[in-house]
Image 1 (cartoon, helix red, strand yellow):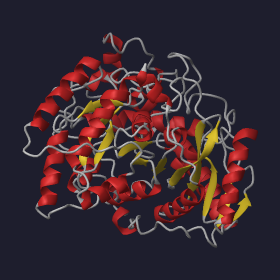
Image 2: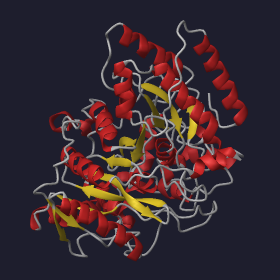
Image 3: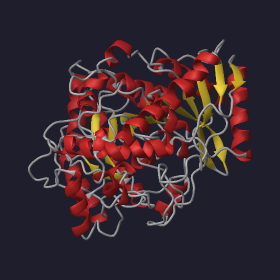
Length: 531
């Protein structure tokens, strides 16, 4: 059931409350705002609260605040039952671990039994999965409460180059720091929900920066891991070359706790075969001395870098140096604008990758190919008001057999990898490359405005290099951590390391976070809800 309207929200919440009231033990109220996942986990373990109380508190916050944010598309009908089962496990001495009873929201392109996976489109409104995605399965096995689904840029933003904020199913998303500002894409709902404490943590997905950008915009810790440390099975795709999934949280510790659960090999995602051999205990990597004796290279020529953001980055560098890191400047030609190559890769991969996902959709889903989705968009009144130029361009390609695709992929991966970040690791001997994750959130452009897409068609080199886009092409992990405010809006610092260096980056991020303490919680959304 989807709960975009206030009436529907009230109905779902009244049903869940009625179910809760029938439980033998009433849970005491628990305040969840800005309570870290780690603290909630500790409180559950210590018996200071219950999963039912925490889950109810998040549902109450969704009901109170999400009308102005449009972060949450659906609440799981059995969320409180999941929580009650967790509480019973604890009473029986059978806790499943640190995430047992912790409420988590999933981006609405991640399959979870109990709610439709729509990717923000009415074409998939009946896409009720009969099997969890691998990410969801791992979270459930760890005892997490799958609280519901978050809004997303429709089709993870690859439908049109025109501005299209949020989705037709979930509505337009709004940044909790300033509701007139963008929450970025396409994991915008997951970012909003984590920032505004609508869940203990969230899961997003990332193709070119869809975890990094909203995390930077909303003062969060987020990472796009090495491909495919986290399985992509059961996730609506764009590009198997670049798609990944990862946690979005308010602290590095919370991030590490979630990554411990979702990382690992999955036979159904062959590219994840090496994940088990490389995954680590990321919580053990948390160290306030991780930066001591390390060498970092700063790359400044990224999108959003200017005099104002440079000042925030320079302050962050001072913190890194005070923590014992050597910081060296990297050359301006280290990275280049690879957005056009990324565009070619995504346009040529989505047709085959989407068909591969839709083949397993339930019979109620009539669209089985990209061509079917295009036709649905033309004929459905709820979808036809938006352009679909990128879909149509993708349909017209020859897929991965196209020589244009082969050449673009080879060049971009080499230029971003061995000749880009790889050059920094080898030639300059740095343990990680740092830089501005993205500038502060911009004002939401009107739907239909052209020229807004990160991989929109433009002259090669017309835009500065994109830090997360290059990391995505290289297949390297990229961690963003809050590093300050610009005009009251968060900006993040990125740490990019070689393949499988997640534990190292988590250590760097934790050290920086603990020394800088730069996360500032949002408040603007509260004022909007009070009106």
